[in-house]
Length: 286
Image (cartoon, rainbow, N blue to C red; front, side):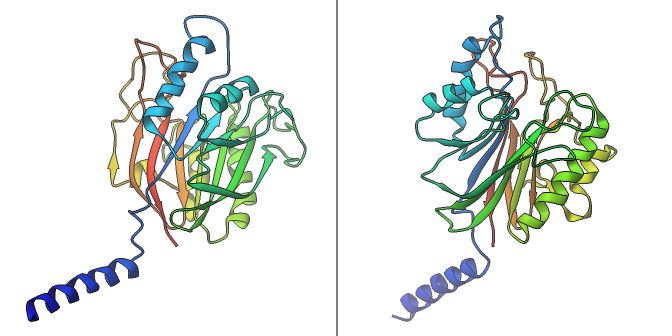
């Protein structure tokens, strides 16, 4: 009798310890940033050839939420048709269905959008299709506040794509995201991801603007497990070893990163995009 009583006490104390420490590993959340490369009709990397490979990659990796960049509306519709258990939120950066989307695909069985919005990376962020920093391509942010149905915890998901030509535009974009999103996020966990068009290095001002002063942290550096390092922009070439990442996943607040990896999926030499997606498994804390 005493033996059984002792075992019961040990089990009970273990459960109390786990609850007190917010055991979140029971609810791992898979998040991905994926620059899909806008649709073109020229082989060998036309959208017609890449589309089934991209869908196969997503069916294999099964992220709960995906921040896409560069997707035109017809590509968004193709993903919608090929991913029937996902919903999506987005807006063309030129307004309506025009231009590239920062589309966010998510599994509604796992995640419930509580609110969302868009803004443009310019001096007039509320003006659709605005650009004031010399960049010809309009750039924007789509953000969503999600409720994780499994853990019952809310978090923010912020998807963006910085300019590829002008350093000043990238720097202003980083500061604008901090100025606008940190007051909205408050004390809640947040994930910021996308194609930042700058290498994630300490000597890069754009990178520092987002990771300094406890704004966000780069989970490539903090995750418990990390896959092989490759250049995330590869131009439809074989993976190139090295830590030249321009596609990042950053977090803020109580988010624990179990694993992060660069997804080098391909079929018969065909890659889904000229960028490799980045996939992370995280747990949302209190």
